[in-house]
Length: 79
Image: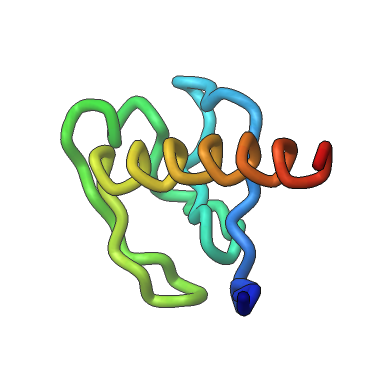
């Protein structure tokens, strides 16, 4: 079996604070012009560092995947 490693690992982060700045989960760059509250209201943005497009739905998908992957890694290390 081959193990794949991400080029840009997506790490689980603490719950998002509504008043905080939107942060790219890929390169961890904060966008100084967009708040998490704006994202929740439907805004989207392109990361100035890596160029990825983000919106609330995509961020939720990445967060769910990161949680799943963390649980998977914990199960694998127990074996």
